[in-house]
Image (cartoon, rainbow, N blue to C red; front, side):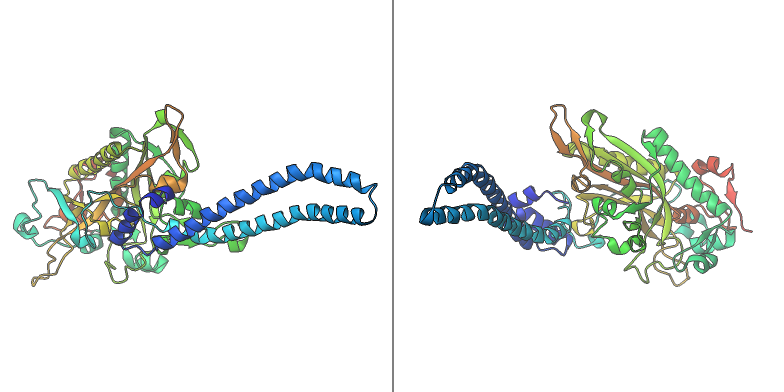
Length: 467
């Protein structure tokens, strides 16, 4: 949620953000409703003050008139009675008038709140303008000396590569047919060393982020209330991507939702709290199972492990002071973490600066990290894919967007309360990361070398061989 005062002060900034992010929200309509709400709020306050004043001023007058009534007769008595009725009737009239203003004010609330919740975080000023992913800008890339993505796999390794689909089949690592039988499309079953490799990748990243980067390990719920999804900005923008558990119709009080990232639980942990500044920054990480409906992705990467409904992810978040330089410093720190992990795995990667049209609604800045996957890309005349970059990580700066929605604040040394700022980053997501691991470490005989950093988590297994 954006700051309504900032919107009033500089509506053009937010209108530009809506345009750049192609959001569907009318800021002029919100400003008109907001102005009406402020007008009604002022009128309610005036009416309440009038009620209080009338009550204070008429008390003595009522007593005086009632005293006079005891000895009054004829026309005088009639006049006093009329005056008393008027004075006694007026509080009820004022109460009704205030109630009507309250009703009008309450009527504006839902629309005002809905529009406010749908305004995206404006992009940072230095984010390049673009329509979508095709306009993202490459920042840098890395590859180990033994493999260059600019050259064909066969020219460097001496044989045509198998795709990860072929490798997991031949090595007995994944069973797609039984996964679909069990849960439907885009599901799978990791089997044998496939499951061990999956767990090894997660454990490698989790140990790295906690032991070498000093993040606090957390285990957070993956089934959360709607308020948590709204607070982290996944609702209303990504509601169609979430799995919904209808509990309210069964008398449970509130519905629940499966989270698509550990970020939701990590950020919701401190909702409605005020953190002492000496405790900042908060550095949390979790490993969790994630669920995404992949709505709108029909026909995209339907085979294999790239775009699936359930996966596991090590996620990190930072909650820091409301300071741009500090936020940018943590963003750099997160990217360094990913690069260290990928270099440890010897996976070629590149960093992409996301343009305004590819930021998503809640981010003010985002860097995507893509790994080279030999099994992706166009199929050549020889039946071999050309290879292609595929997204494996994403690191985002959110400014105060999530913390404002979650009412997550901190108290500075002078006792002043501020809205905190937040960042998040994918440390590793599996089984997607298994695609480049398997494809880039395959051998001519169909076996796959286990990366050195994963072997301690694989019971010392150095190579996965065909069954």
